Image 1 (tube, rainbow, N blue to C red):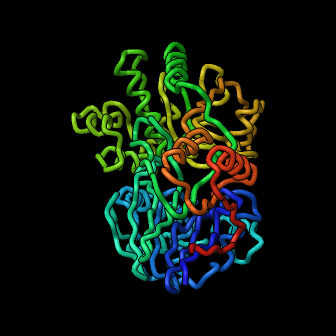
Image 2: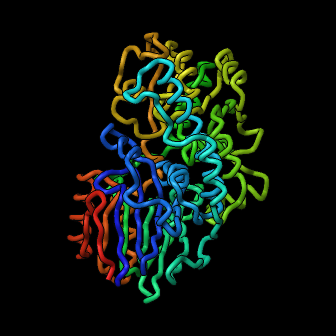
Image 3: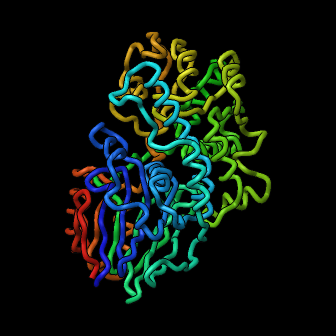
Length: 461
C-alpha cells in the first residue's frame, strides 16, 4: 500500500501544524502544534486527536514555535511513548518554551477557577508544567544532514530552513526511494543570525507553508528606524519600550543595535532585556550552531557577540524588572509579550506611555484586538490592570523583521527545484494567502497543487 498523509492542523489556517504520514501501517507525525487565533480554532486543542496517541510510532519536529510544538506535552500525556526527533537547536528552545507554556496554562486555569470566569467547572490546563518536563525526556537530537531511521524502513534528515534557531525541513524517504519534503516554516534570505534556507532541488511530494503567501515584506532597513529611535531617546534622556517576541526577534534587534554601535552611528544607550524566556533564548543564540550565519559565528568566537554582557543586561527576577520603571533615561527596555497582551512589558507600558518624551517601538505584526494593535492604531488611552492609561508617547514600528518568507521569497525557494514535485500541498496559511500563492505557483511554475481541508488525507503514490 502506498504511503499517505493526513493534515490534522494548519489546513486552511495558520496554526496547529500536525501532519501524520502512514507508511506500511506505521505512523510518523510531523509537528504537534497548538491551535491559536479565534475561539473556534482554539477549541480544537481540546478535541481528541484524530488518532490514538499510542498508535503514533515516531514524531519529527521542524522547529520550536508554539504552533508546531505546543501540543506535544498533551500528546505524551495522552499516551504517546515513542521518540521525538528534533535538531539540537529546537531541543534547546523546547526546554525553554514548553515548561513555560505549561506554567502559563496552569496559572490561567487557576485564575478562571478563582474568579469563576470559565465555561468549564473546574477549568483545567491543556497540559501542566510537569507534563512538559515529561515530554522533554522523549526528545532525541538529530543534526542537520544526518540521515536517521524511521519506522517501516523510512529514513529522514533535517535541512536548514533559516526560520529560527534549529528550524529545519524534514526530508522523509520511503523504502521505494521516493521522498516527501515537509517544509515546516520557510525562513528568509540574507538575515543576520541564520544561514539562508537550504536550496532543495528534488522531492516527489512537497508540503509548503503560505503564511505570507499573499504579502510582501516592507522595503525597509531596520537600522534606519532603530538609529532614529535611539538618537531620539538619547537627546531627551528618555525611554524606549520595545514589546518583542522572545525567539528570534529579540536577538535580531540586538544584532542590529550592535552593528550601529560598532559603526559609531548611535550613542551608547543602556539596553535591558526583561524577559526570562528571551534571556534564556539569547544564551542559545550565543553558542555557535550548525545553522548560524557564518559571520555571526565568527563574531561570537572572537568575543564580539552582539549579546555580550557589556552590550546588554538581562533581567531575570521580578524586583529587578520593577526597578527598571524608576530608572532615568536614556534606556531601552526590550520585553515580552510582542503584542503587549501580557508579560512584563505591560508594567513598563503602564509607567512610560503617559510621557511624551518616551517611545514605544513595535517589532512585528499586531493582531486584531490586542493591546499593541490598539496603541498602534492611535488609541488615546489603553486599559492596563483596570486603569485607563493615557497614550502620550511617540509610537513607532519596525515592519521588516518577520521570520517568515514572503510571497517572493517562497517563489525564490521553489524556483530552485529542478523538476516539479508530483504534488505540492499548500498549508499553514489563511485561505486568501493560500489561494494567492497557489495561483502564482500554477501560473509561473505550472505545478500541480492541493490546498488540504482539515483532517483530509491523500495517497502518496
